[in-house]
Amino acid sequence: METNSRYELRDDQWERLVHLLPPERTGKKGRPAHDNRNMVNAMLWINRSGAPWRDLPATYGSWKSVHTRFRRWRELGIFERILEQLANEPDEESRMIDATHVRVHQHAAGAKGGASSRQSDDSEAD
Image (tube, rainbow, N blue to C red; front, side, top):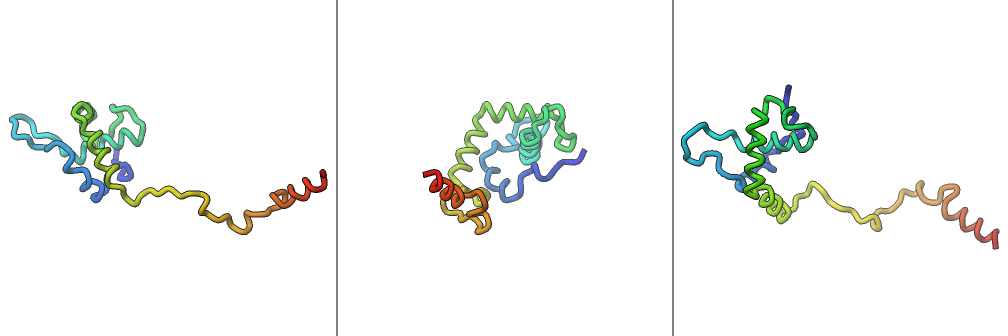
């Protein structure tokens, strides 16, 4: 199964959080750790797809390794630290628009049965 890049971090997004993650190489003996970026992308795939851990595409590696890393980072408070950092550095991806500043298109205002016809109905009822 092929990974879906829409679930993965872009380079600019990765650069914003790479320094918030634990180092991949700790100097301890044993098997080297998996790449943090691949692990984060795998976690995002699970989160965004809503699939169970066992359905993680094989291109991300073992679902069990990803799940173990997820649990470890959750216990260390890594995700809270990432969210705090990202909340302090707003990006331009989402903006809120106050509807009081958005004008209605001219054809959307005053259609038959709109406010003008209600006013005339009200005056006839008096």
